[in-house]
Image (tube, rainbow, N blue to C red; front, side):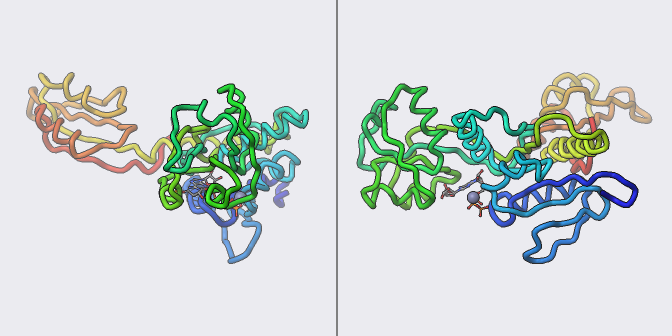
Length: 301
Ligand code: PRT
Ligand code: ZN
């Protein structure tokens, strides 16, 4: 509780790993001010009733499930594996997934040694597949009606084939460099993943819910502006339709008159997709001039 009685929200994020910098950056962009000392496990929000717990990513679903934390940011791969494991144990929906976040992208894939012939899922029949994601792999194998042995490891999955522990693996891939270094080839994508925000299921007290809603709104705003740009340009009235169609991800550009001319107007638009040089060249070719592209700092729908 804060001195005025507002309950404090607890959010768990990864302490040190691939999701840490992006998660802290997201919170800073949401307006959170905090001080962080090295090895500190909790960052206390100075201007919001929000405290950030820094933990191992694998612990985050359980912390949210057990109500130690109200919210958590973790990979979809971790969330789905945990959900399937809990389902197998007879526990349904231990947490709610409330938002997809635009970082931590990777895929859980099955890979086979370079020299092994692969002609689709049937090629995996009878093989041993090493993974740290047994439930996700099992679900995929069942969907494909493939009978294979799931070998559960706690890490270093990529060396399992060369150690003779498995004939294939199922692991996270982002650039593919680890697979290539271990002479493995990606064969099937089992799950596409990215960071997600999860929360405890069920309604919390209203002051807490209110702050969670505010935070979600801000997170949405931050995500929307990341790729967004504000474009300003002058356009001949005759080319307005063509120029508007070229503005990426913009629905309703603002059209303003220009002093001293009836033939040209000013066009202002928020583009929700990346604006490339090719787009600007296209706009210019269509007759646009005085083109300005500005970053968007904040945006609320
Ligand atoms: O210490 P802690 O348990 O918190 O961290 P961790 O080592 O378990 O997790 P970490 O930091 O590696 O990953 C956290 C989350 O980032 C994962 O749960 C995924 O949601 C996401 N993510 C995104 C990845 C990758 N990309 C990734 N490439 N997680 C792991 N990898 C590993 C993969 O396991 C393999 O070893 O990177 C290697 C492959 O990378 P490439 O680029 O060579 O293909
Ligand atoms: Zn982990």
